[in-house]
Structure formats: structure tokens, C-alpha cells
Length: 352
Image (cartoon, rainbow, N blue to C red; front, side):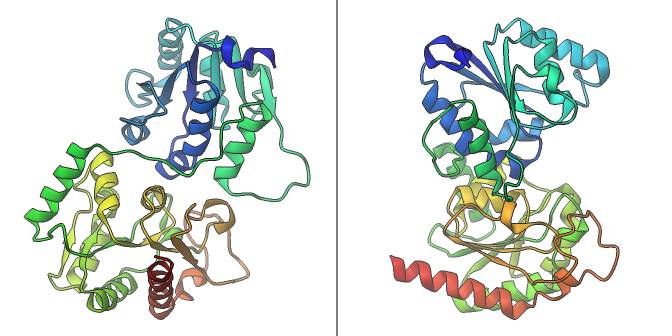
């Protein structure tokens, strides 16, 4: 497509995906867009949570927040958003989600070049259409987005995941932990027992607590529990089991604060979740516990990680809630997670 020559594109709109973890996995593709169009102005269209994730990101020049619950709600809201975009005179829309709605708004905004995957009945809304070759095997989501860009000739380098926090944010994170008795020299073990997609992805609070207790003893670590507003009960359960030895920050952090605090961790134990991908972006060593979801597509994209899972006949089912006995998670023992953590820590120490 001639419209994708770097010298002919001056203003790019990237329509972001909607989940934190998925958005982290798009960062290599976004870096590739930045590299291929070095002089273009790149604007990200994202929901409020993902907008926070990309604040201060070097690959993004501006952010437009898509407020689905407010001014951009419903048909009138989509028309309002399209009108707002039209005033920006974008040359190219890179549409990362596969939904009809994500392609409709750039079409309504009359952006001349609109590229994305040909799916969900949106063929006529796209000027450039990506169709994965039939018979291709499942690849990691990071590679999917890179392949999508490469199909359209956007050939920036294959970079790692990349998130950015400011020195000021890091200072505030250190202050937050210092208020809880955690000093800069302390070893911090992060525990992330939640997963926003549904309970099928969650390992058990008592097992998280058992792992945290044993690893904290082994490493003389301070334990910090992370989680979103809907995960406070799970986190409180773990905090209670650790009998006052853990700092519970579940439901108390913004996305930016969560990013900075995870970056401060020396090790991370987590379910398949957005915070798992944030930890991967900051190269925090981690053990990720998988059950109902497919680790081949969404495992941590980092050499400093290991996945713990059990082969059971019904996994990965990709369901929000388990309809049977949750055997994919009950089969994962505390001992297997502890062993994986110790082996990874030893491997990292040896490599250094």
C-alpha cells in the first residue's frame, strides 16, 4: 500500500486494545510503528485504564481517552468521538482490536488509510485488511501484533515489551513502601492473586499465602500484595493468613502507581493477568500460574519468567468460570510454585 510509505504519513492514530495485559503485549508493535514512521505524530486512542498505562511512553506523542461510559457512550457518543477525530486530520489509523466498533469509529472519522485484521464483519470499514494464513499455528500475542504490522510493511525492529515510569513516580513508590516499613535495600516479593477476566484464572488464596510465607523466609523478603478494586477480598484473605507480615495494596493504587510498585519488586508470583505482563515489561523475575487460559499465546514475554501449569484434558478452556472441579488449578501445588521460583532465582543469579 503506497499510503504506508514513511514519507507520506504525518499523523497516525493507533486504536488500542482494551485490557491492560493485552495493551502491554502491543508495545513492541507500537515501538515498531514509531521506528518506521520516525517523523510522524502518533496518537493513541484508548480507554481510561489503558490511557494511564501509556502516559510518558516514548512511542506515543498524544493520548485521546475513549470514555465509553461517559461522553462516548452509545451511538451518539461514537459519532461525537468520530467528529473529534476528524478534526485531527489523521492520515492513518492502525486498528489493533478485532471488534467492529474499533474499525467503525475511524471509518466515521474519514481517516483515509485504516488497517487491521479482517474480522467481525468489518471488511468494508478497512482500507487495508490482514488475514492470517490458514493453517498457521497459534503464536504469542506479541508476535501476532508484530506480524500484523509486518503484513502492512511496517518493519520496525522486534523490540522487547516496553513501559515507562518517571523518576518522580519511582520516588513516590519508594515513599509509599517506606511508610509501610519497606526500605530501598529490602527484597520485595510481590504477590498478585487476582485476575480480572474471571475466577477460572485464579489460583487459591491459601496457596498464595503458603508460597509467600516460605519464599519470604527463604529470601528474607518483604511481601507486598497487589490487586484491583474487585480483588480486595482475596487479598485480605492472604493478608490475614500472613498474620501481619505483608503489605496489602489491593484496591489502593492507580495504574501508574501499580506499574511503579511492580517495577520495584525483586520477584513476583502471579496469575495470568495484566500485572503479570507489567512485571514482564519491567523484567521482574516471576512465576506465572496458568490454568484455564492458553499459555502459548499470553505467557509472560520475558526470559525472566517461568510458567507453572498442569496438563489436564479440559485446559485451556478459556472460560471465565469453571463449570466442573477447577482441576487445572487444584493440580498446581504450593511446592511446584516454590520450586519454580527457587530454580528461576538460581538461574538468574548464575547468569549474572
